[in-house]
Length: 398
Image (cartoon, rainbow, N blue to C red; front, side):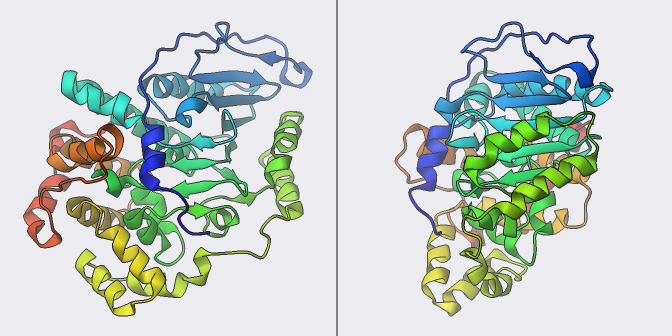
C-alpha cells in the first residue's frame, strides 16, 4: 500500500479548464416523510458541474466532473455554499450526503490550473475570491448543524479533503486514496489542513502534510481521516438505506453507518502505514524541517529513504510554512486556522514557488520545478514571518 503511480500525474489530471454552470433548485411542498420522489435542479444537463438534489429527507450533493476527477472550481463552490445554508435551515432536510460522480474520485483537489493560475494572471481578485469562498465553505461544513455524510470513494485530495473531513461522517472504501500533496506544487496543506492534520494520532498528520503521502483503503479509516469503512460494492446500498430513513436522527444515521462498517470485510486485518507509525512519530516529532530530514537520514531504512527522496523534491519554503502551520494549528479553532491559511495563500499568490510548482507539474509537466529559495537554509525566519502576517488588513470574514 505504498505510492503506486505518480502523485504529479494525479495532480495533472485534476487540473482542468473552467466551465460554466447555471441551474435552479425546485422544492416541493410535500412533507419529508411523504416525499419519495427526487427533486433536482430544473436545468439538469450533462454540463452541470455539481448536482444539488433533494431526495426524501436528504440534500444530496454530487460533484459532477468525472473527466477531471471532480476537481473543485469556483462555480462549484459558488453553487454548493448557498444551497448548503438553505438546507441547514430547511426543517424537512435531516441530513446531507456528498459524493463524487464516477468510480475514480470523490474530489482530486482544487482546479488550480483553471480556477487559480489563469485568474492570477488576468484577475488576481478572482483567485483570492476562490480561496476565500472555498475556506468559507470549509467552515460551513465544519459548523453544519445537521448530519453531513461524505462518501469519499476514490481519490480524495486537497480540496476534496476540505469538502469531507470537517463534516460529521466520512465513509471510505478500499478504493479511497487520500493525500494532501500541496507541497509538491509550492503551496501548503490548506482547506483547514492546519486544523485536522495535527489532530490525527501521533505525528501522522505532520508526515502527511509534508510528504503528500497517499493513505489508501482501510488505512484512511484507521488513521482517523474517515469515521467508517464500507466495501465499495455496498456503497450504493448504503446510500439507499440512508435516503430511506424517515425524519432520521443523528443516532439513526450513525447506526446504519456502523452496521455497514461492521459488515465490511475487505482488508480487515491489513494496514501499511501503521507498520511505520513508531518511526513516523519519532521522525516528525522534530521542531524543524532540517531535523526531520536528519532523522530520516540517520534512520536509513528503505521507508525512511523513500520519504527523504520525496521531501527533497518539495518546495523548501512550502515545507517550512507547512510545519509551522501545523504546529500553530494544533491549538487553534477551525475558523482561526482558516483565517491563518487565507493570509498564507494570499502571500503564496504573489511569490515564486506556487507559480513555478504549477508550471512544472500541471502546465509544462517537466516535473523539474526550480524553487526559490532552492534550499532550506535560505528560507529565513523573517521570510516565514512575512507569510504568516500577510496581509492582516484583508482577513477572512465568516
